[in-house]
Image 1 (cartoon, one colour):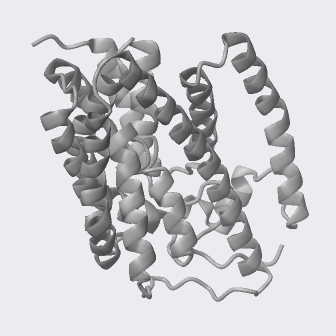
Image 2 (cartoon, one colour):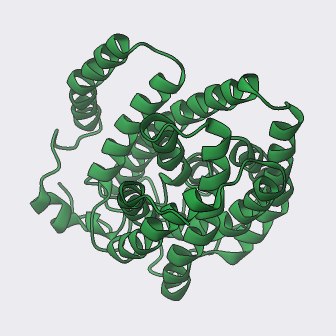
Image 3 (cartoon, helix red, strand yellow):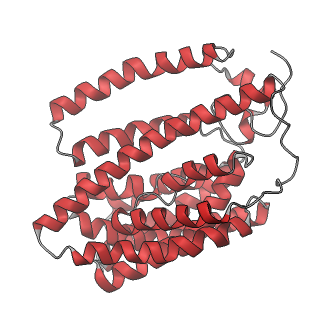
Length: 328
């Protein structure tokens, strides 16, 4: 068995991101394999999913012990996501073999990464609105313990089904697209509870997709082992950091990387990709500062402001999610 140390190092860094934010597993690992290690797209999806099936439980155990998981929500998500994930694999299988299939998977992956990057932006904005409502007294304070949720069964099962299809086809979505939809369906969940619930529901989801790819995909044991050597310690470290370290900067960097990866997977030229990324680097921070000012916040959230208002309890964008802030 041949291990690739460079791939293991890359997997370690991605594992930290997964444990820290609940995002970035397939959304980072698969494009890294395709773009930097020249792995065929279907092989990258198959191997990444099998590695994720082992990696996800590591972070999930940490969140289960902390009580930041809503098991009732997990059960209804899995009712749709498990058959959805396996169906996604069968769809990829039904497309046949050869370069046409690899191109289809690559394009589908690029589109999924664009959606994931947009989802990160939506997530940050929704958290900002949540903070503004709480500051202005337009929303009830969050409870100190895990909130009692009114489960929305049908939308939750449909979310699991659609998320499972995307994950089975591209390996992207278990920690990026689904967590954004959960925020919309269950806005009372705090950031840490979103991460914990999403990580736990992703375990059977990814396991189902991984089984399908072992049976019908293009699974390579050496490649997957190299991923696991880095991912397992990385996600353990990230999960332990998640309750203390702000994740806002990590999510901004993640969104930037997702955009760059998506453009390359969609065959955008290197010159045009560079121009697009430079525009984003120049414009996005200014727009975000204007949005913050529009909602009555300082343009920049200083570390002192985060500590004063409890932002380190989950959101990491200068937006507290557990404590009711003092008037500003």
